[in-house]
Length: 130
Image (cartoon, rainbow, N blue to C red; front, side, top):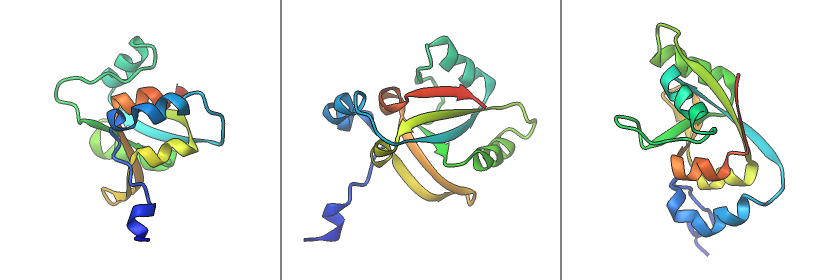
């Protein structure tokens, strides 16, 4: 068997996994956390929409998440040199990571996962400001 066929490479696009995500949202298992730096407006949008990610004009299609707080802080410092940013922590099932798009090194900072708002709104179990 071709090795490439045995590995699911996640796209980060929720509409491709609709049936799986419905079952996954009820499933229990090992959880993991990811971190995202963002401007205050994006953070306020999430809070005002019941901790749901909402697409908006001029935003990237996918949201990127660092695997550790320090990397999220480095992205925040790079993209918000005035230090006016927030960092959130999301909790997802570890199994959910295989549906997200993954890069081993984003912007020469570190590993990161990306997902669109459809996918995020299905897999995020908890969200908090850190």
